Length: 207
Image 1 (cartoon, one colour):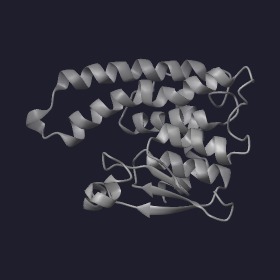
Image 2: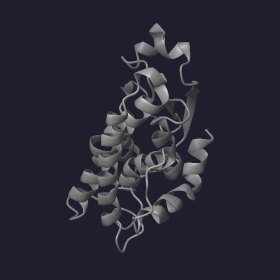
Image 3: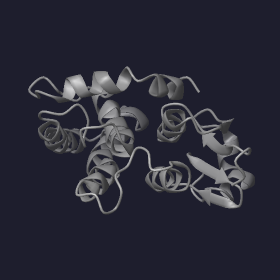
Image 4: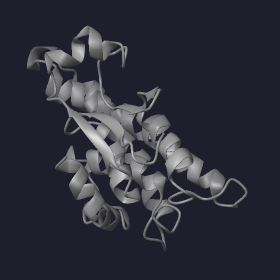
């Protein structure tokens, strides 16, 4: 994109779009917002469905480029606009671990979060299944325990803050907000607080 043209983010609060705004704030990358409320009929309209076939957010528009999966957007922004920041170089020995934690959010944590949200928020009480909630809660605890173990002797997943913390850190914050039990974990509560204290994250919540 031209350096003087900001990227455009289609955004709704309390969604994965927060990750994209957070990253842009961390990088100081100019952006504009198209803001929606959750359930906004515009998200199911033909114009937005042409951007995202499921009528969801985030969507990133960068000139002629359009992406709608948050992990792909994070990778894209860092590759195109990061200038080497917030990710190790591919030849760095930490790069495989960076990729693992970048994708851990959607591959491991968020499937369990999604089940809990559907069963406890979206479905009416008569359609909820406590077995599903209990199973997802147990698996979420195991997923978070692995993050806790990775944070031993370090503040962030790779030591220094990176795009992996934007992805898996955000998923961890969401899980904590749903009431995931972190009491037996040594490092995760402090990690969540460090992330919440970052000004760029605060700006993304308030976008």
